[in-house]
Structures are given as C-alpha cells and as structure tokens.
Image (cartoon, rainbow, N blue to C red; front, side, top):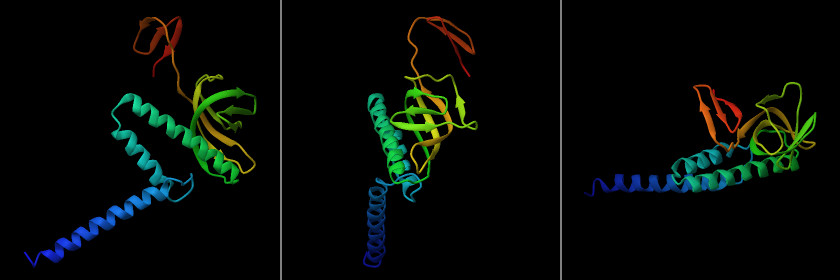
Amino acid sequence: IFARLPHLATAIILVLILIITSSSLIVASAKSLPGDQLYPVKRAVENVRLGITVDVIAHQEIEASFQEKRLSEVQQLIDLQRSEKVSFDALVIQQEDDYWLIGDIFVYLTPKTIIIGEIFPGMVVEVEGITQPGGGVLADEIHLRNFEITGKVESITSDIWMIAGEEVQIN
C-alpha cells in the first residue's frame, strides 16, 4: 500500500489542480466579450448549461438571459469602439432603408446584407454582423428567429400549412 500511495497522492493533486484551474477559467471567461480569447469558453459553458436544463420553462428563461447578455456584449463593444464579429437575437423596433433598430442597437444594412424571411417590426430576428467603432452593427445577415401564429389549423400538406387564413411554407 505504501508503494502506491505516492502515485495516488500525485493523481489526487493533479485532479485538484485540474478542478481549480478549470473553475478559475470559467469564472475568468464570464466577463469576456466577442473577440476575447476566453469568449469561446464562456459560450461553451452557456451551451452546456442549456444542454443539461430539461425543464422547458427554465430552458426558455436561461436562453432569454443569454440573449440579454449578447445585447449587452454588443453595446459594450460599441462603447469600447471595438470592431468584432457578433451574433444576437432581439426584437425589430424600427425599419428604415439603410438601418434597422433591433433591440437598442442600430443595425446598418448594405447591398450585401442578406435578409432571410419577410421581417417586420415586432418580430424577433437574429443579427450576424460586425460592431462598428462609430456605433451600431454592420449587418452581414438578418433572419427571422422565431414567430408565433395562433389560430385554427385549416390544412396541412408536406410543405404548406394553412393557419387562420395564413399560408405557412415549411422547408
């Protein structure tokens, strides 16, 4: 037993070092922003947390808190005048020809901006783009994130559902 004790002690010390290091890494990553080295750690921890949450309501609440964090991160990057690739979900508040107000963020459109879906104020979209040092986000892509249709389901085919007189194309 005494011959094995040094190996066991070494293994226990290594496990403790691993636990302390990984928990310190997680804590340090919590305040990271897109473009920071620890940001992928932060997002991985969030994905694990979502993945292990089985309660539907709790899952939605956690997802909503993460969406609020993404908006806060974008605003912090703008305040710091950093240009970084970002992705966030928010409500479309206003639409103009060259910009949309999404959440509290001005999102600028160019001829290269890809818009997927028919989007109107009041809808939740996902924005992918680059923060601009002068303020706002230059959009690469904007697409409908989620929506709600309520009413009587009138018909269902393999690619089209008719709900309350509205045709919904399924792909």
